[in-house]
Length: 345
Ligand code: AMP
Ligand code: MG
Image 1 (cartoon, rainbow, N blue to C red):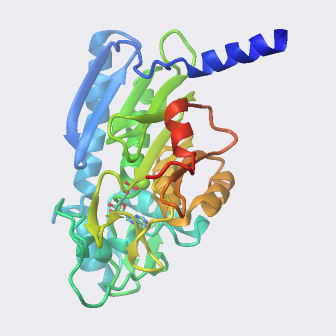
Image 2: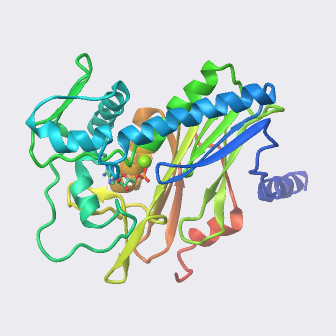
């Protein structure tokens, strides 16, 4: 009898809605950046100092946007794409650093993460915001991450393949968040929340202590959420086919490309990754969609990261997989419906 009532209480507690909106910040600013919205909230210190720190963090993100955007012909990345096949090109040290991290993640994910997929991303119209299936004809060739020659000491990058074209869309937001968080920290901020297009980085703990609570959206049902991730100072990034996609033969095709096939990846519907580094969380969430559930888990474990993976089942239903270290509070009704294979979808 006692056991039964304890069980009921546990269920009631778990089912309670979790407050996902953090308390009021000392200062907050929002700005359109990197093709999406950036929001920085500072929760400690005086208002003037908080405002200055936020402005400095946003300035760093703006600078990175100018360096990395493939849509800008004067960005360092566009310069590489025009000139690096002819020999080493000197670029900003931050571009060298993010490319070096990209190559590390490529190696760690057996090439699932590959910044040289740009020709295919372009062929599908994902870089100009008007996605469409490519016309008939051969799939553009992907040169592969091994064709990048990075000389960190010299501050240069060269491509060994004339077809190499790089795109930091899968890692750049995370890198910008890491840099912006460092800027805040350098100015003495001890509690902050940064959001760049749904990639989140936190600094310290929220006011009053306890964890930050981050809602994870349902990749198929607008307005629904899968649940809430609780975490300390960390970073969380979600990749999915829910934001940028087009339809082909009645099937959804998302903006993450499987470098092996040169086609949109469909091994996962969405992947949410929690890691200390926002760069790692961003790159691994993109890679996870290519890797699929089992291999994504291995890559996360290897990187010391956690994740929430939504996989398509053969019958069209969705399955939710959380790694053991993730502090995830599911919205029970949503998740039960999702993992119920009897429900047609
Ligand atoms: P994200 O939203 O972080 O998952 O990044 C998706 C973006 O990363 C796409 O719009 C492309 O610009 C780029 N991308 C697509 N496929 C890959 C891949 N396999 N590896 C690295 N970047 C990719
Ligand atoms: Mg990413």
